[in-house]
Structures are given as structure tokens and as C-alpha cells.
Image 1 (cartoon, rainbow, N blue to C red):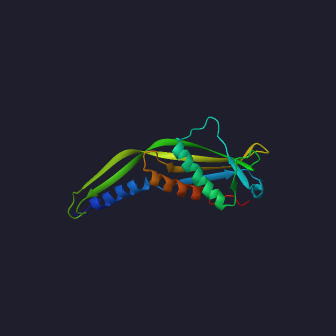
Image 2 (image 1 turned 180 degrees about the vertical axis):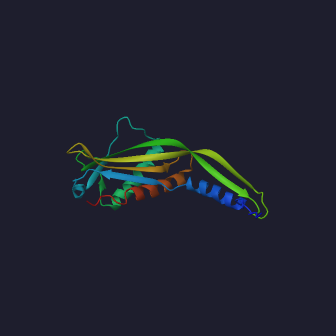
Image 3 (image 1 turned 30 degrees about the vertical axis):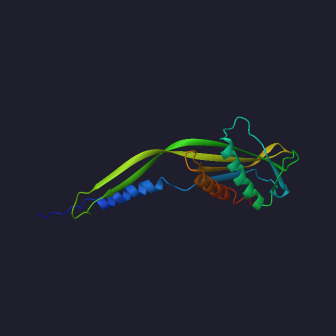
Length: 181
């Protein structure tokens, strides 16, 4: 009778699998945008910040940080901010902070020859902040562009890290603005 040796997965392989699970939960910011087909974005040169009624907004400090980050990106695209009601675009935003489970895995062990080993996975809850930017054409009163950046706002994070994360997200979100049609 022949016997085959069955290899058990090593604790190192199990540890690697758990680490991959932990790393995949730390995915980079997700950005999405959409625009009204047929819109001539070349006619927009100025913009004004407006408040979206019923939208969720953060405190005054984060409000200023969001606007500053978007202003920098739009300025680089050649748009000028104004307080005039005659602006070519009205821009508003809203935020949402949701919670998501994060799994962290770690372990140690000797491999398949020695057997055994230990691996542990723990979970924690993290806040995932989304920021939605909307652009309206005041002449037609229509939404012409919208963009969402997820995993962007973290109210529990330190201010410098939050601003850096926000700037990175807005650069990524507005990278393809104006859209090529």
C-alpha cells in the first residue's frame, strides 16, 4: 500500500494570506466622476461656491480645507473663483462619513516542515469619508459635472495628514476635468 504525504498549508502561507487580506482593506482612495454629455466645458472660466441645501457639511475648519483644496485644483485648470452671481459655474459639495470593518492579520510560524505556528486576525472599525463635488451651470440650472472621492475624510485623523489626503484626492478627482468629449 502506497501512502502519500499530504502537505498542510504552512503557517507562513496562512500568515501571508492574512496579511494580504489586511492590506487589501487599505485600498487607496476611490474616485468617480460623471458629466452631462454635450456640455461645452470651454465656456466655463469662473466659479462660485454655493451651499447645497440639505447636504451634510463638516465643521468650519474642514469646510475651509475642502474649498482650499478644490480651489487649488480648479485654479491650475484655469478657472477663477468669484463671489459674483454672474459666475459661469456654481460649485457645491457634500460629505458623508461611514464606517467599514478593517481586518489586520499577523502571525509567526516555522513552515510546513515544523508544523504549528500561530496566526491572528483582528478587526477594527474605521471611518471612511466621502466627498461629493457638484458643478452646476447657472444659466441652464443643470448639473453638468459630479465627482465623488471615497476614503478621503477622516475626522479622527490629524490635520496635516487629513489635508495631505484631501489634496491627493482632489488632484486625483479633478485630474480629468474638464472631461474630454
